[in-house]
Amino acid sequence: MQEGKRVRKQAVMAAWATLICAGAMWGQSKIHLPTQGREADFSAYPRTKPARAVAALPVSCTPGEAVVVTAGPAAGIYVCHEGGAWVAAAPHGHQLSEVSGVSGKQGTGTLLQAFGGGAVQAGDCAQFDESGNLVSANAPCGTGAENFSLDFTSATVLNLDHNLGTQSVLVGCSDPAGQAVIPDSVRVVDANRVTVSFLVAQSGRCVVNATGGGGGSSSGAVNSVFGRTGAVTAQAGDYSFSQIAGQLALSQIAPAALQGNGSKIQLFSGAAVANDCAKFDASGNLVSAGAACGTGNGDVSGPSGSVDGEVALFQGTSGKILKRASGSGVVRLSNGVLGFVSGAASDCIRADGTSGPCGGTIYFGAGLDGTGTAADPVRLASGGSVASQTFYSASLTFGTLPGQSCAEQSIPAAGATPGEAVAAGLPPALPAGLVGTVYSGADVLVVRLCNVTGTPVDIPADTSFSARIVRGF
Image (cartoon, rainbow, N blue to C red):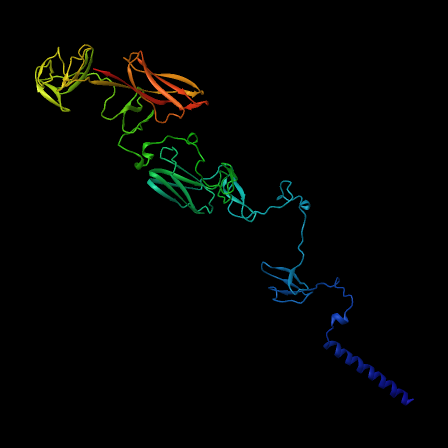
């Protein structure tokens, strides 16, 4: 009996010792969830923290590890993938069709467009930046914008530092009155500078525009102009004179291209020959006189209101008479030199160089005989006749002359009679295959051209022809 009690007491004491040891071990040990846990359900827990909270992402990680970045622009949940790098947990997203009842949605587009920021003014237009964001164009819609302008005074070279950041620019210049001024050259130096040059100093304003009239600045190229696409730059021949407004002023012509100090530009018409003199026609144009300078041309009438000592050449029925114009001196010709001889106002010169009353024998100078009539022509004192000549010219148009054919055109020649001796002056540039002659008619000289070839020949319009009638005094 006693032995039984002792055994039961020892058993109870052993049980209590086991419980005490187990309680002590439970208070000091931690459960290793990967091996001791099973299907953990935290849904009933008042609060859980399944990921480590950090202020910044750790430099390295173990695949499957998760952290929560609690602050800063990178705040969020990150998971370490099998490569050992952090990746953000899949963000929450929506289709555009799911957005409804939101005041920010407008239109039926399928993409949301982000605005890139910048100051926005009421009425401004929007444009795309290089990243595809919408930004303010900083200009009202439809107004365009003058990107850069520079006023200048008496300048031949301008450096236009427009700072628009593009070489696709348009440059225009005008004078103070608003008339267009065409530069001699426009050179795009780089994306921020254009150099404009003028032949002569100009004043006014130059404008550099890179917008194409769409408002705000743009670095895009011109789509198409003058048949060219892409970054179009100015080329010779882009504009004709009929497309340029305004008028060319004399001051815009380079000094090196001007001669004289006249204030008007004189037009010239007709064919000119080297060393010929020029004269005015009825319209005020300069034309060739058809004769070398200083030789005269045709018959000349004596001047009215002559002064003492002047020499006059008169046309009369008995020939040409050289006499003094007025005063107390007459003129004689001796060895090619005109000299004055005393005499009365009505005197003429004799062959011996003396003066006397006009009439009877009339002399042009020493060594000449004859009255100048048909019965007594002027002639050399030593024998032989003295010839005279009259020059005539005109621009004629024959057109196309068929093969083996001839055509005639007339030169006006007052006083000419049929059958006179004529010296023809055919142009040296007459096409090959043409044969020409000139003969006289009543107050005309007739130019006759014949095509001796078997094919048509084109004769340039307004070709200059000339001829001389040779006579004796």
